[in-house]
Image (cartoon, rainbow, N blue to C red; front, side):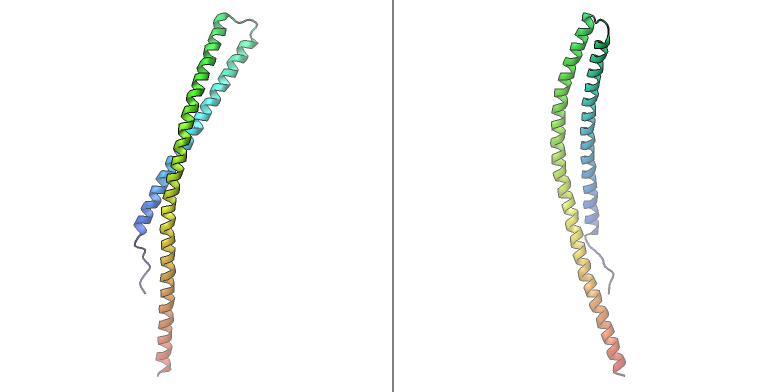
Amino acid sequence: MKKFAFPLHRVMEWRRTEARIEEAKLERHFAELHAIDAREKMLEEERAKSEKELLQQASATGRELAALDDFKRYIAIERQRLRRVRNDCKKKIEAQIQVVTLKRRDVRLLEKLKEDRIKVWTADLHREIDQQAEESYLAKWGR
């Protein structure tokens, strides 16, 4: 019996590589989303810290109050921008999840095909071994 060979092995390896590449892209999108969340958290912490420092002072000048107000407006605008960026990132993540799912499905299809071929090959191997054993027995019995 010849050794098992899966003719689509290279294709399966290529599909696995493609799946890993798409999974890496998905991880980058999640990292981008995490960075957006971290940036928003940092802005909120800076705003709270600035307010707290100004309120803890015995007296605040008009210039300091105006600067705080400008900073609050900047943070509000930045939050809106971050929300848009977050929504875009989430859309990218959803699309990439679909791509990864398709790539994984392609790999699973080839793996299933390989498993089926191995089962057929194994059955043929056992059949051949049984046939050789039977022939050997008959040859010994016929002497």
